[in-house]
Length: 141
Ligand SMILES: CC(C)(COP(=O)(O)OP(=O)(O)OC[C@H]1O[C@@H](n2cnc3c(N)ncnc32)[C@H](O)[C@@H]1OP(=O)(O)O)[C@@H](O)C(=O)NCCC(=O)NCCS
Image (cartoon, rainbow, N blue to C red):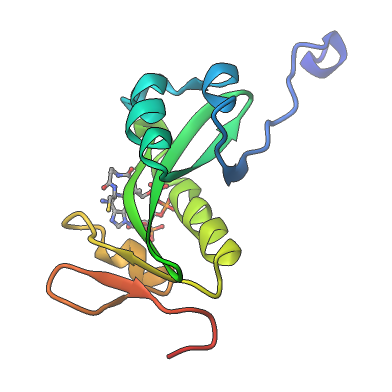
């Protein structure tokens, strides 16, 4: 009997990209190789009034990024990590793109880890200072 007929073949899960909420930390689990704990997000992110954005699949957080508000019209990407087993699948790009679309009228800055500059360049960030890259608001060069 085909797997599909016996009901053992699961439909592919889709990945959701969105801003994380405090409740998510109780409902979802972090992918084991993401190397992060809910408690640290609760205290170091939510407790500091930063935002966190997540990529979720089947109640598992596959990637997380932390956004700090620098000014009323500027955010800083303070942290970005994709689970080791899911790197290179477009998840990091999709998560950042979701933020860029949501905050299209804001400037977004990042101090990229060495080697990740190209990743940010592809998302529209440009080097503005020695260590820093920025994505200007939509329509601004
Ligand atoms: C960097 C990171 C966020 C990228 O996320 P991802 O989901 O693996 O990336 P995507 O699949 O969306 O895009 C991958 C592309 O970015 C490029 N890239 C640039 N730097 C990279 C890096 N250090 N690791 C992986 N990909 C990188 C790849 O070459 C790839 O291009 P390709 O599709 O032509 O091969 C992820 O690898 C990660 O968590 N790395 C460890 C932590 C880190 O460096 N965070 C950045 C902090 S500023």
